[in-house]
Length: 82
Length: 226
Image (cartoon, rainbow over all chains, first blue to last red; front, side, top):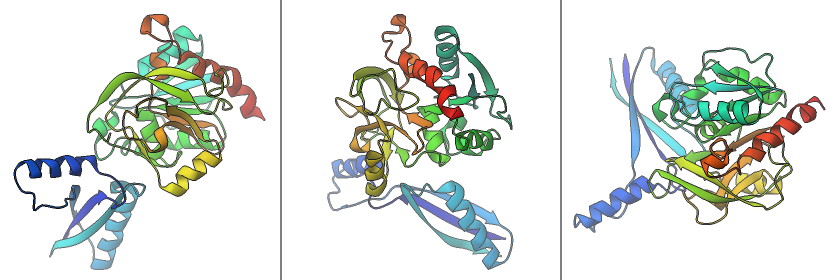
């Protein structure tokens, strides 16, 4: 079983009002040194199969459901393989 | 003309749509469950506003996988009228029947007010009873209504006259080019964030939405037979 974490965020070119609000709050907290911030979601999937099959599954799930390519992008990492 | 109003778990404007069509326009309309697998016998389909599947993941993202959606897509591909308001618009973009996506409002706030709109294209199945560039007022009520598409798609939408409604005063949600509603290239699928079904009787404060349904009832059957 492999544990894969998929991260979904807005594309760089798309304005994220949520990130803007959080960044403003960070500045109000006094941390002006924080210059940028990305807000996103992550999904941890437990997937059966060998490495190639797992990657295929993850791509299929991300690209057809978890990500809306009009506004979002994604990356994934393997957290645990056993 | 027989019209289906789809009910998803979390739809909350289905009764408004049904009432606008049935009680105000005397149209032949039926509720259809999200579990249905066929829309045989229907000439048009409407996707109501609301919060289908709790807006989980993204608004409209889960509804796209409902049992009824292949039948909605089939009907759209046959050139029959498909209309989505608010969450219905979000579902139409998620299902790929309309280009682009609806993002969270720039203000981060849920907006609920009546806003002025411009009828940009009065030459669609849904808008022939409006004047070109007429100003109307319709209610909006959404948290994720900021229309987004890349520049190329936006240019195509404008070139093909697919922008049907624009916000005519202050932009309430940050939508690009003030877009409030668009049709597909073929012109038979309309998605819009405003709620015409909530503006069909004087008692509701406005009747500006009524002509959208009347346009459709007048044009729908005729044009799709061609």
